[in-house]
Image (cartoon, rainbow, N blue to C red; front, side, top):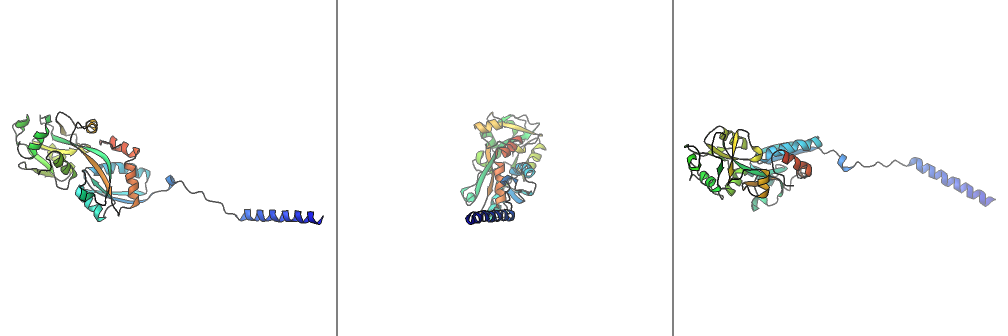
Length: 281
């Protein structure tokens, strides 16, 4: 009888302890899913004036997802972006040409699009097509009158980009085989917008712009019978193409990598394609 009483008493003691522990226990907080964590901060950019408007457009889609992030997107040319990354003064550099081995040292490159360089003239110019050799000779001053390529008897006004421009670097490499333009009375455009304005304002001018920077008041000239397009760039029939790059360095903050991951994602590449550039995916 005593043993049964002790057993029952022990059971009540154990039950009491369990109830006490249950009352003292703190609820476990379930962590938020990663995608619900709000990103915030500032990402700085510098570089190609061709990539800058693309960065702006994709940036709008990015900040719609992450409204606590601000983007400071400057230009200056591809060389400026490369130098800024090496100096650690920006998070993301932008270039519209391939980097040399020296420039690429210590840099992580991300191709975000393919750009097509369009050769452009004034809308009144009757010339429809040029060969690569003719284009080469125009920029080296061997052809100086439009009548030599089927146009009017007027002098050709050649417009180039400045030395910091990735578009200039790509054009000189593809068309001029890295020779320096030597046409008479060269005019120089600092930005893609300046190039478009100079050509649109002069009936005798010829220039080049990234296809994503085309203006409606410019006339595009076919090269070797092929007009610039997404399809012609992808199948290789149009030769004036170049990569559009973003790149990071050792001092780039992690938030910038999130932006680049968005640009190369399927969602980011849809934005690229919808705005006139050729996606890499």
